[in-house]
Length: 387
Image (cartoon, rainbow, N blue to C red; front, side):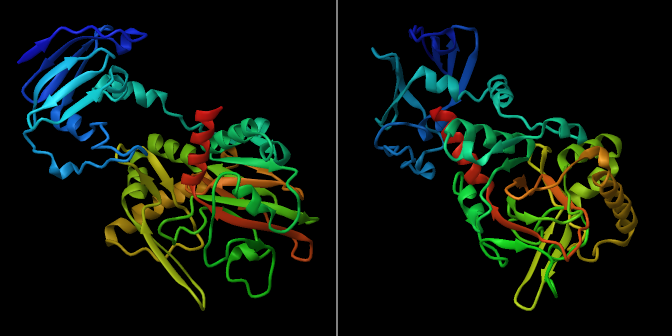
């Protein structure tokens, strides 16, 4: 084992190296704050920042599969600018800054620290009615700080309202262009939501619609939906939103077996008309690799007949109905009436939307469209870095 006592002199102890040791498969770095980092040699070689291994645009040029699994350094030293110089057995040289290494340390404690710094969801119930996340179109379309705040609300709460949006047809496209791109579907880039004869979708009726995810029969599901009120003199037609993640977490704590049924048993969603047929097989509650909530896809209008083992049918129905009743409980819902010029956006895999019945003879006209979460998050990341 080669050991070097090194003192780099960055601005704080988190970035000051006091000792480096070459171990059998890892580089051990002691920091001035007492932390110990272990970096595997293959990881260091894979992340070499030299121009031969990484393009100026930041993308990797080095093919990971070209690195020998038993790669190891022949020497290591600190150089005058404070960087750590690694000479590999094949003669290749890599330079790493202490700041970069500490930032990317993958010890359990550093990974836990970074996880705590990530934005956290703000789960909500009907109490949010007192302080709905909202903004003015004139503000977010002319001021990046106002746009940043509105996009942050959408990320954290899963929805936000926007007021004073011009009631010109197609203005919804200009709203989307503030953060991303419209996702076109069989309904078009922009679709009109109003009562029509012979509707292909219950949205185009005057019926009440319960809390639901839009288009769960697609793969992938559109991750954001926007609805913009162009005109409305209708009695009824109130908008209802519910945080399905809040409800799902409550179900997990109160009825863990029912939660398990909904998060492990895929169901089929199906939609068709004379021109299209779409199907997707997915659990109602989607979890990520850590078991955290990733998506809820609940749509009683397009769920197909259950098709799995007989002994699972009744337990699944019990879980499905429990979850559905909770989603329809006013204690978990916010309710408001869209006025002309109002718009709302929802994370379609988290916040379910619904409406009350209205009279079809009245003038109620909404325009809607879909967008994707990655565009919104990208725009927010850029704003967070620049403001």
